Length: 177
Image 1 (tube, one colour):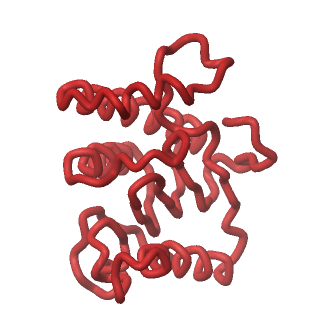
Image 2 (cartoon, rainbow, N blue to C red):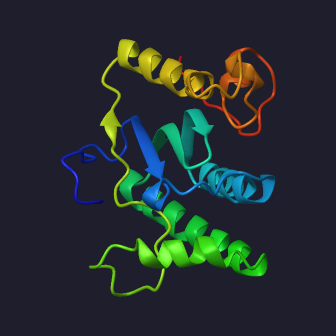
């Protein structure tokens, strides 16, 4: 994982993770870029990832997630795939200003690539008990409200808040038993 003090110590345990776009650039501002993230998460779900809560905002996303395999490898695959797809989308749309920013802000030691999409690491936090789980789910669902985007969590389309109220959301959610 990244150069952070936060590490995944139990690869199959439930974690709260954050994936942040490099330099907090606002990329998830349209359905196409968000769709790439959602489709990638759906693919990972088919391969054994469980998502307990999620939210996508304009420049980052939060997940409460668990892997049947190796969480750090699944997150790395997710980041690699989404970066590639989003860069292709930006090139297709001739979004040169954004592409130039991803080149400019790229971490110097990333010599194997011209562009960098995600910040390093995912700030993983182990979900050790039900209290922490409830706090993280609440934090995820309140994020769009705190930013002033919506008045009620379930009104944010790119979140699991609707699922927690019994409605169908964009991603299938696993619930703790």
